[in-house]
Structures are given as structure tokens and as C-alpha cells.
Amino acid sequence: MPELLFTDIDWSSFWDDNKAALEDYVDEPPTDELVRSIQEELGYKLPASYIKMMKIHNGGMPKNNRFPTKQRTSWAKDHIAINGILGIGRNKDYSLCGGLGSQFMIDEWEYPAIGICICDCPSAGHDMIMLDYRECGPEGEPTVVHVDQERDYRMTFLAKDFESFICGLVHEDVYDTSAEDLKRTLVILETGRFSALLQEFIEREDRINFDKILRAILIELTRSKGYFALHDDPSSFLVYDIQFFLFSRYRHLSSKEEYLKEYPKMIALGDGEITTRGYAPGFVDDWYNKRWSEQSIRKRLLGGLEWKSERELLKSIERYTA
Image (tube, rainbow, N blue to C red; front, side):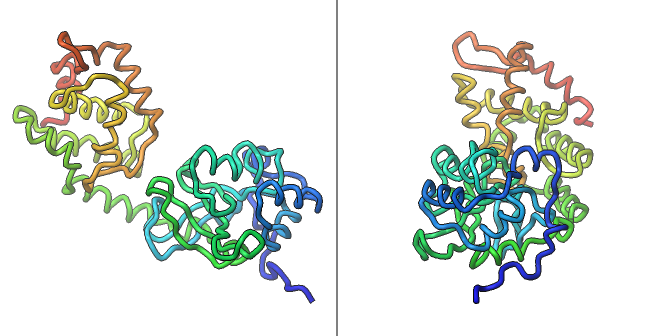
């Protein structure tokens, strides 16, 4: 008699069939012929539990979208998050062989060829959940791992099989520590270290207390948002301004491309305690283009880039100097 699968799962309350889920993930239940075709294309036998699950509801966003871990990941110190579970098919972008499916992530994002990308995460591609066939071979029962692109594709074991992974998912409310996290973040912003590179610039600038100014802006920004992140708001742009001003003052910059390459070494992904632990390059690119069009950033007479007016910058941060 075949083993019963998912005997404790209530599928009627498992899925969040919102508009995005229905458009990008959910497809018609797969036929046996489609399952065989997808397996041949990917080169791996799909877990029986996964096939059963997809025949009930083919892809989608689960209401329980967190999974506990024993070690820190790029997402949190004790868990990971998923956006959705890829369905069996080719029609939806977030299906196994869809436009943003498993092979795309391996080919374009250079995820390790250890098996199948089965769940995407909120980081927009910077971490994934994969079925890992290294030990069992392409016909065996794969384990489930979290692969962290931001940490040189570091792998974190999650579950011994797909069914265990699904049964182990918990609701995000389990990890709702936003008030505690905010308090800890504010303490770090008040007393923590900037990256070595940014600290070097701050210490060399003996006329203006940029240490005090940056901390004041970051604390105000974090209290306003409820978390620490730099986006496309005026306060974030002011932080971008200060970082560029200091960098271009003490390091020769030949081009925009050179600066965008060096930018993460300060607050975004720097080696200090004060770091957002990630950033959206598009926001920084938009800021640079805006400041260039306004001529706040310009070419030096002798070559390179500089901030046009120190007086202009000081005026914009005047209220933080008191």
C-alpha cells in the first residue's frame, strides 16, 4: 500500500490566492504527460509529495511562508522566507520551466546545478529554495536547502524531503519582532561602527562632524520607516549625497560606474555594524542620475568626479548639525 502524503495539511486554508499569485504562479493541474515532460527537461525525478501537491493546486503563494533555521541567513538569524512555490509547467513565469523558473535561475543567476529551484524568496532572486539531489541522484528523494546568492551561494539545510519542508512552514507572525528589532537597530545606529572605509572619510573630515550628522539622519529615517533601509525618499537621498561627497573628496573617481562599484563598501554592505545588509541598485542609480542632471555631481577640471557645492550640501544637512 503506498505511503499516505500530507495527511495533516488542510489545503483549503493553505494557499493565498491573491491577484499576483493567480497571475504569476497558479496554473491548471498538471497531467501525467506534462509531469514526465518537465522531468525530462529538468533531468530530475520530481518528489511524489510535490507532484501530489501540484495536482491539488499547481503553484502559488502559501499563507505560511516562513521556515525556521538553526543558523543565520541573509533573511534573518533564525528563519527564511518564501514568496511562492513554483508549479509544474511552462506557462506561468514562476513555474518550473517558466520564464523565471528553475533553469533560468541556474543559467542566468548562476545558482549551483544541484537540482531544482522550487521556491522563490522575497529578495527578488538573491536567495532561493532548492531541491538538492547531490546525495540521492537524479532519481532519488532530494533534500531541501536554502541557497544564498548574497553569501557566495551558501547552502543551509532545511528539511530531509519536500513534504517535511511544506509541513514545517509557519506563519510570519511567529517571527513578528519588529518592535524589538527597531529598538536594537536604533541602538546600533547611535553607538555602532561605520564601515572602515566610511569611517576613514569621516575621521579625515575635521571641519564637519559627519559622524553625528549621519547618525542623526539614519535614526530619523529608521524611526519614520519602522526599519533601517535606504530607498528613494528624501532622507535616503541625503545619505547618498553625504557618502558621495566624502568618497569623491578623499578618493579619485573617474566615472559613475566606478562609484557604483565602490558604493556598497560604505553603508549598504560595509564591514561595520551600521549596514543595511543589502541595497537596491536601482535606487542608487536613480539618485545618481538625478544629481547629475541637477549638476550637483560634475566633472572636475582636472578629470574625475566631484560634488559641485559643499555649501549646497551643508545647507541641506544644517538642521542635523545642532
